[in-house]
Length: 126
Image (cartoon, rainbow, N blue to C red; front, side):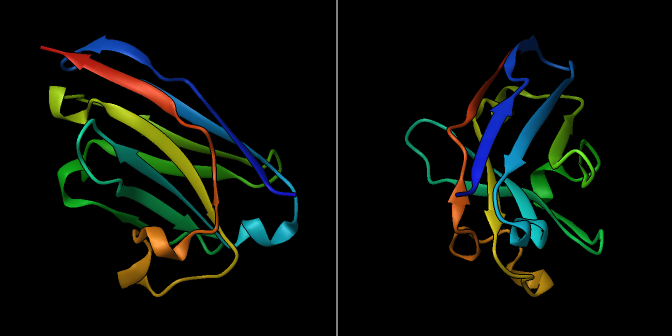
């Protein structure tokens, strides 16, 4: 059974940084593609960043140049480095795993992912 456990969230001031981690366990197919999503109160869950097992990455436009996704396959851990945080980044952040490799255009779609973590809260104050 695939399990994803996020950590690293917290409260920071605008301009600050955080590093989120997602410890993954379960079937090896989860190595195909991993992603980070976020959901703010009253809003839909949206894709933030994704990475496949070839190292190809994709970022949502609002976070390009500020967030960096990476993975350590040996440790089965996914990371998201959040820099230059803005109040608009406040949300619950979720780790997700896909049992397949998506086309690049689809890497940030929720429907591409079959397993989800419980989330970690990121709060950015102005």
